Image (cartoon, rainbow, N blue to C red; front, side, top):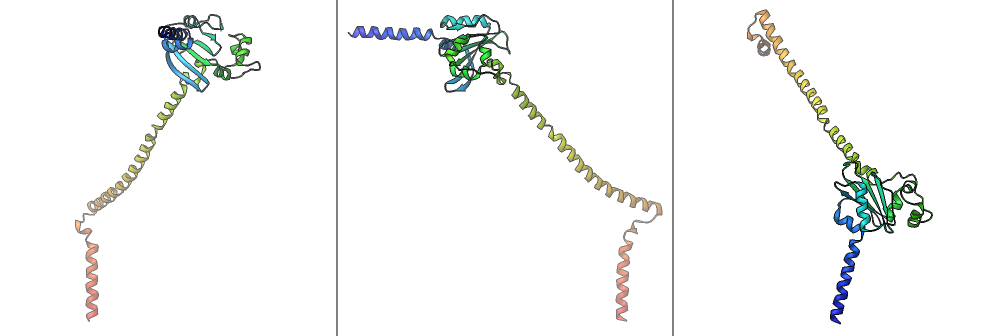
Length: 233
């Protein structure tokens, strides 16, 4: 009995391993590089990068691991693999055409984001209705996958750096105001030099001695001494 139970447990483990190997999500997870995760909870999308392989090659690899309910026709730009619990969007990497992006969408994420008319160009409408509900219709979103989002183009970051570079130009304005204050001080200093230079010119023109400045000071004591003498008399 003990040997029989051991063999049963071994076979169960082996069956679980085979089941894991036959799951497309696990194959993608272990063989491709995860580069981004969008959404949260039941509405999520995981994006992987595959280097050096085109879209049809990657789509065939995934389909070989787990047979999809439907696969779109072969295309070098974009292909879809539909499963009962996920939709795999295989698309060309617009940043590097030699690489391919694999987007694994939960049913809820695909239902919320993709335009219904767009998906119907790749997947049968009846299958979409069975996955998303008979009344599903999601038009006007213009969402076609990871490469169509703004986060992938990274344009927002470029504008951010441009805004920072504009702020660095403010020191040029402050330096102008600084030069303005120095020119004002220069005006004051030029005023003192002009007065000294004008006095020196007066001395040279009339031939007076340097005692010219002290003469007003000598007048005051003479006046005070005379007034003192008048009071005594």
